[in-house]
Length: 86
Image (cartoon, rainbow, N blue to C red; front, side):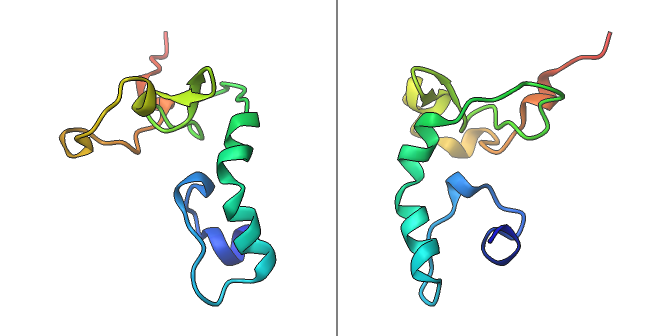
C-alpha cells in the first residue's frame, strides 16, 4: 500500500483520490484516530516532523500554537534538523 498510495509522502498529510481502493479510502478516513495512537522513538529524528507530528496531548505544534500562516516557515522540517552532534 505504501508503494502504491504514499509515493514517499507522509501518510498523515495525504488524502484519498478518485480511483483508490475502498480499503485505502477507509484507512485514510481513520487518519485522525491513527494519529492519536502514534508514539515516536526519537532516534535520529529524520522521520519525525517537527511541526506536524504529535507532541503533547496528541496534538502537533501547529495545533498547540494555533499557527495560521504556514507560509513564513517550512512546516515539513524534520526533528533531525534541530539535533546537534556533540
